[in-house]
Image 1 (cartoon, rainbow, N blue to C red):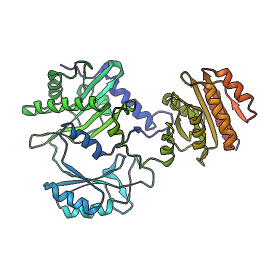
Image 2 (cartoon, rainbow, N blue to C red):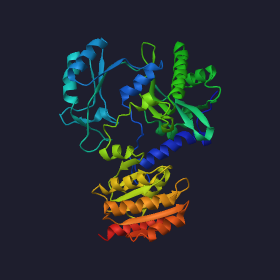
Image 3 (cartoon, rainbow, N blue to C red):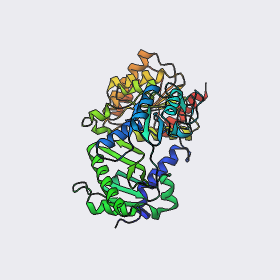
Image 4 (spheres, rainbow, N blue to C red):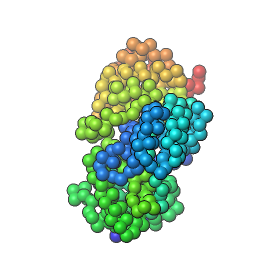
Length: 432
């Protein structure tokens, strides 16, 4: 029997809760919007699941009010749910600039679907997770509305502590699972899966039992769990989270809503899935950065962060904030950086009118610091850099890099460590 997720075993969900709290501003650190590099709309995720035998609601996708009406008529359902398709949560409580309230609506009349779609498609929907002006809705999902008699939570994720995949489940679904892990840890169950042997029938049945499924539904839930695991492996997912994983009054186990995270390193194996990546809601600068294998997220501050590695980017943003400054972005060069990428990164940063200073923080393990230095000096000369530049370099070939910078004759401020770099960057902005 799988033990409840408590004590040290609770680290999986507690880590998620801590990360979530941090990103929501629960700690004195910079606020970042959680996101995946591969962004799929809800209908795309559900199609992937359906293609792998996972039970989801019947649905169609429409990009016009007339198509939405035809979809509703084809469903021949007792009740229909119409969902605006954007890459943000809180759609149900969102507001359209057409005046319509709510990005999710239930109706029994196909004609109402058409009327609602007219007020959704082509209009901006604002939610707690979108920019102030909202996001333009280009498609709607027209789905069969199913009653839910009971909601549970189920997820499969890669857990570094277990060196492989782990199932996590709770009979208390449809709510914030992080809060359940804190308030009722006895209702969280964890089961490790042997990556070589795969999920066993007894494991799937035990998890179904832990989730509270009874009678014939227990076997049905176990079958769905096994299909979700096969999906998890086949698409190189790092997480498949189903909330709610529910049952209907008619005795059917259904995955009502799901979030799938993908392993970016498996893109070469998952070309069809990565081709579905919806970048239409990204800022143009994010899409431009992606062309050069740069990961960029815009923030609200005025000090640009230019780093290699996501962890270092987070630390740099944090230490700028702790020293009284505000980061303007999160820009990760990655490990295999080339001089041309450094140039393009500077070009992107200098096009942002909010940027009043640039902090370069590079730890050269794989990265050669001299390459960074050459890219910096070239960019400064060719782009005519007009904002203060603070550079902290450490690691491979750092002495050569420092020589290149010092002999460049450019107004570059060197820093001995990250703390020193952050203080100098904040001070350079304060002088203005």
